[in-house]
Image 1 (spheres, rainbow, N blue to C red):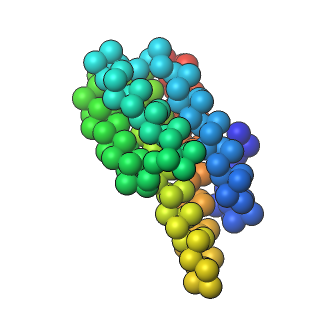
Image 2: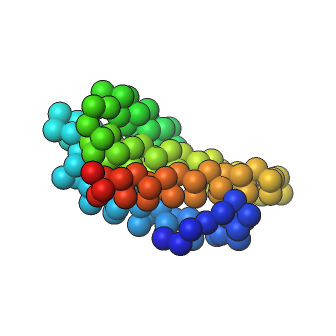
Length: 142
């Protein structure tokens, strides 16, 4: 995934964002070996919901719940940096998905487009997805 800045996020289309989002789900899932043992079912559920969201079968509220679940799980495993970073990957992917959901809703409001809001949501999505890259790098360094 190429590095993005807030300035060039406005150039991204929904297709671009969904492409990055899909690649990020794959990256987060590839760290399954680093998920905390007792948190594996929750991590697997998060991946399932993220895939459903990418296919339009889960809602923004569904991914927000996964974000909250992964954030709580990361608080519980803070003693193991590898596990924490792997869970952060899932949390940030879910966080980015929530902002992607807000963007889709905003863009679907015909005639009421708010370019500033849409640009900000795109930046939030990319910030979250880039965070996943950083956390994944940390997992591999530990």
